[in-house]
Length: 357
Image (cartoon, rainbow, N blue to C red; front, side):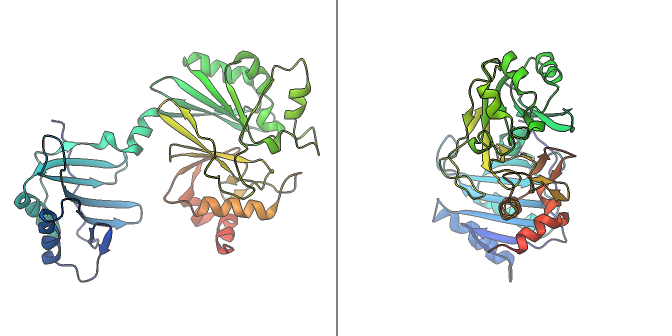
């Protein structure tokens, strides 16, 4: 049975007791915790969580009655915490008296020892994603666009996001790493994000090209939006686009929005207009976000091009700001950032949140 060192709870953070989703913090004493745990015998569907949180860090111990399997009717005790290597989780089965002893140990600030626990960290979605997901950024084209290779490592599948030029370098990377390109994803239709598309389409005829339809048929400035011209050119290998069109005109995807499976990963498109009418962001399995020219470190995309709109840009920034939790953000230019950093430091995103209706 694999074991890991148990991180001890903080003696300085307050405890919260959560019984069936009803948290209690003020006036919390050991009698309340003990009463909640003892109540699990009467209601097998119930659960008890004793937890601490401080910013993005957390520590918890939870207990519930095992309802099936070889340990049915025993108590499943789980202990989890945040760490620099990702979330950790250990578990064990025990009787009520043993569960009470573990909970009282941590509540009283004494050292916790879970010798019989089993490491379950690898079962957590964030750790599964971390193991499966590979991200490589190539600086391509005349304007130094960030082209991302998003890899599902187990099945050696990948998606190419924004091939803005230097298709030979993109293909060299893909081939040297033995990857199959399943998708070519375009965050928007500007030339500096799509110029490498014809060469990629010629070399990768089975790869599906996904884009928002509004950025294909924007004819106000063909040099800025070259995708329709690619379709009309009989000598161009780009013959078909898959359209991300199940969106409304606001900043959130509709319930019918297309999700793209990439092996064990899932790519979630999100309509984030403002830089262009068809600007799209892609989130990988509730993890990193690839946002094109919508959100940058401390800034946002221009809105003075055809199809740009200040109001829609602010709406899209607000959408990012109101997302739950933190996430890595990979923009179309400049370096990566995180949602939390931008909530704290980005004046445009902060303004968008202040203007929330």
